Length: 198
Image (cartoon, rainbow, N blue to C red; front, side, top):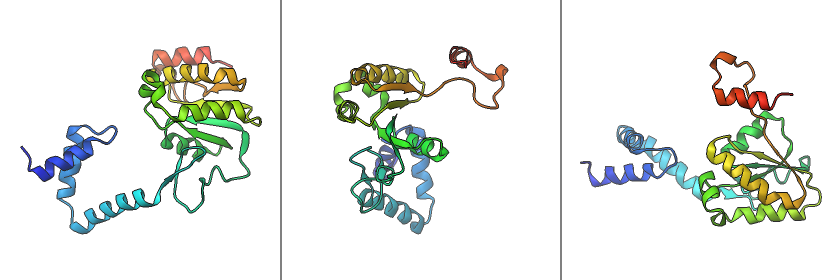
């Protein structure tokens, strides 16, 4: 239906997480309608990311610098006794932006559904388990994973995997958001809020 070049662009966009065929087609036609200077800017930004961005060998977050590890891992003010496990880099950025957490991070980096179904496929799990066993300064591992069905399954798997280390394992609190109204809360949220009451 589309020319080969357009079809190829749609296919490439469709490979991105959360982008279906319709959204991919909208992206493609949006780019076609832009000036060459704008599309060249996008292409250059993609090239720069692939060239300059590295993965931290300690926390697996992405960063851009000449250092061997990211800015969070090289920050001596961070608490080595706390390790926050997140599913991806955007979750890390969201938590860190609050300023409420001052410990270290660990990015799982694979879809939680993959972790649940094929834990052996996730190379980072062995690194997380090793860190929990060998880091004597580590007091608590916080599993900061979305409370979706895949997330809950991943949390249970990680709790079982990390339990032998003897490190305290905690989860993020769940329940009603601050400023939320009871009448707009769904049943699951209310149940979770009641169970986790203080």
